[in-house]
Amino acid sequence: MKKIALTAVLLAQISGTASAQETTPSNPLLTRRGWEVGGQVSKYHYEEPDLMNLKGHQLGAVGAYTFTNPNRVYSRIDGRVAYGLLKYEGSGTRDDIPNWIFEARAVVGKDFLVSDNVALSPYIGLGYRYLYNDLRGYSTVGNTTYVGYRRYSHYVYAPVGVTLRMRTGGQWVIAPTFEYDAFLGGRQTSKLSDTGLGYSDASNKQDSGRGYRASLMVEKEHWSFGPWLHYWNIKDSDTVPIGRGSVGMEPANWTREYGLELRYRF
Image 1 (cartoon, rainbow, N blue to C red):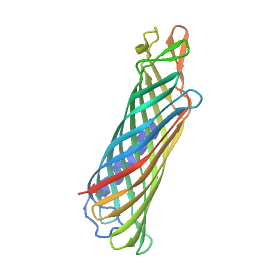
Image 2 (cartoon, rainbow, N blue to C red):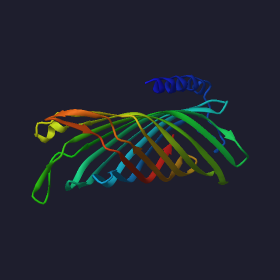
Image 3 (cartoon, helix red, strand yellow):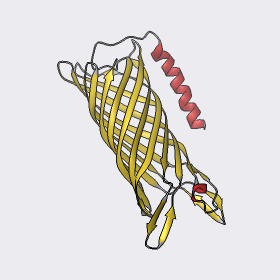
Image 4 (cartoon, rainbow, N blue to C red):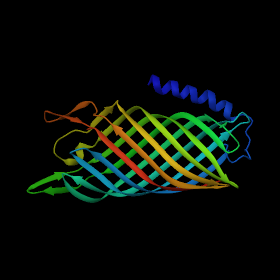
């Protein structure tokens, strides 16, 4: 909680500077003020090694608002929602597993003009990621029947990254972004009561993990588009009693998403 509070204080102080005396830069290498909306298509893969995986395609929507000031300091609030029907493989197989992701972030940064054709825009922030999937139902392996349950996941993290913008001619700009996501903590809720086997729901705390992001956007005037990648690697959670003399744990896992995104800036 101390790490989260410190990050929030830094964001509040710098964003106050960024929101004062807003202006929209004419230089396409600089971060631009205003609204952005867009859509995504992606491939999703979640895996608990040697235990189970979820794979499939997702559709998503993104939105953001960016503040800027004459000192080239900027702050941005952005959100994302994605949904897909995934395939489960583990204790048997099942299709059409509903999977939702909601994400909200706030970052602050500063533009640095390296030359007439290159700019660097480092940033730091605070992010929240929520995931829900519904594995209720039955699957069979041999003569054994397995029962699924709902899962809820919450991550809090600090994104630290940099965008490099390079002018390629006219108003066209290529903008790769690289980001490290420092994992501040997580909570995994497993609704084991859905199984009807006498187990209680488990709420597991996750303390260790990390994430990475990368994208390669092509920008011109109001439009931007390109490929992106999100990756998470989370370690074993703590253990909690779930009844019937058993304990529950969220195993170590990794998540990879990659896809294409199109945005329009107002």
